[in-house]
Every structure is written in C-alpha cells, then in structure tokens.
Image (cartoon, rainbow, N blue to C red; front, top):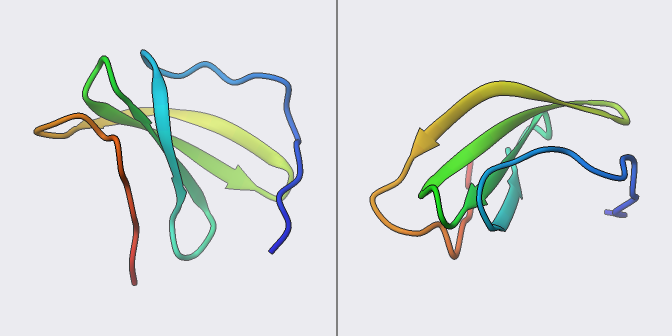
Length: 68
C-alpha cells in the first residue's frame, strides 16, 4: 500500500486524531477528539468528499481500527 497526498485540506471536526479506511477502501473515518465523534468521507479514486454524516462515540476516538 502506498499513501499519496491528494488534497491540501478537508474540513473535519475538533482536533482530528484517528483516521482509518473501511476494509473496502470506499470510506475514510476521521476521529474528532473534541467532538467525540467520527466524520465520514467518501473515497472515489483520488477524490475525497465529505458525506456530511458523523457518528458519536462514548469516549475520545484516540485509537481506532476497522476489521472485516
């Protein structure tokens, strides 16, 4: 796997700290420490768009993982 920068910036929540891709690579989830939630972004080739959806977690999303 190779990581490549495709955008300079994308808006997210307060103090982003965890970023994980879904197993199929179609979504990127970014944990927002201050908001205690995850922002959901759609990945389409080299384009990333904000879905406008978030989900709350019971604690701070300091560590995140996704499994099949």
